[in-house]
Length: 455
Image (tube, rainbow, N blue to C red; front, side, top):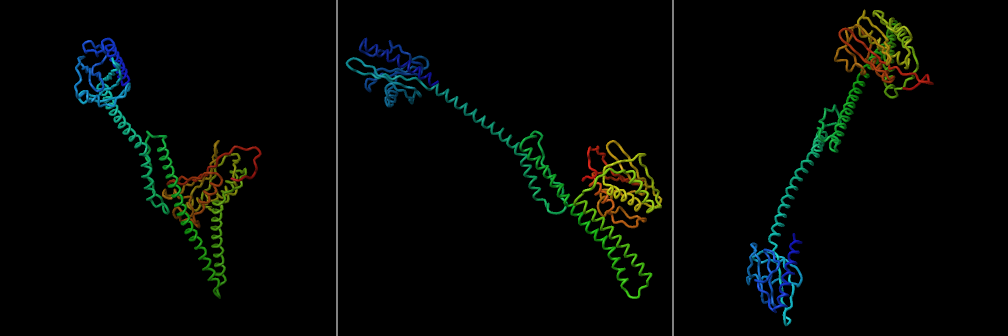
């Protein structure tokens, strides 16, 4: 728009200079307004000065009429620091702002006339001002909308981090050094932000809390188990030791009866044997905890079952012992001593904890994926409250009138040997009886396999 005003100004200036110059050449006088035909747009003016004296002036109004410039306007124009053929912006107090240029025309006898031409800037300034106002308003509105959207977006992105900080503060306020750890809070995850950095941080913190809780609770259970283990082991070892010490003191008395001395020595031998069995069981469990390595061979599970049940009949003759095995040999991969120990402990457990006359069935079932060894009895069953800790060390599921001697390590040994062998052990019990199972996975034969391996 300024360029258009400048073009109009130069055109008007050239027109005024031409008219003044032609009139001076032809008549030696300045033209009058009646025969002055120049291109001056509405809201424009021209002024001819001879030195500082005004000789000719006109102001063209918006209704295409004209008037002469007032002396006040002429004084304001003359007060401007004009440079010939230069362009400047100036203001007239009564008419507004104009873009003005000046040039010189020579007359007769060396006289010089300064022709000043101006084109109004009021309309252009109004348009520019309106444009600036609207651009400012639009800019401010856009900035406000952008700020609001940015605030909302940033808040939405940072909200999960605020949740992370809140949960982290809760965790730091929770004692984690000792005892069981209660479930901690979790960072809520916004489905709209799945996959974002904040969501990944929330997911990572939730996983970390799960691992920390499970690890600390496992540590607590291990500590409780160790304390219980030490207390039970001390208790079980204290009883035979007390008996041995008592009989030893009796043996040391002078003049004791020979028959009573023999009974005392027999009791010492029995308690020592009981303590030796307990110590051997503890050593076996400690060895399995430290280095669960067994020798794996191809063995006939049916033969192991037949031999073990045959031996058990002589220990518990008042029970009814039955066997259910396939017709052919059941060949599995395992450590024969470990499998015999597991089966012996299971049948002994049935003998100790069930009354005389109980039917105990030892069975083998095979599928394409696994072999299942089961010991089932129709005894009174195991209390439901005891099942979760049945395979823990020194766990005794109730007292039995028929039980002769047990310290609660038999099933713990079964569990430890099964884990070391890669087997699974389970129990199912109700009022109709109990069923212990050892699940043995069937491994495919390997060419060139060694007869002994480590698992």
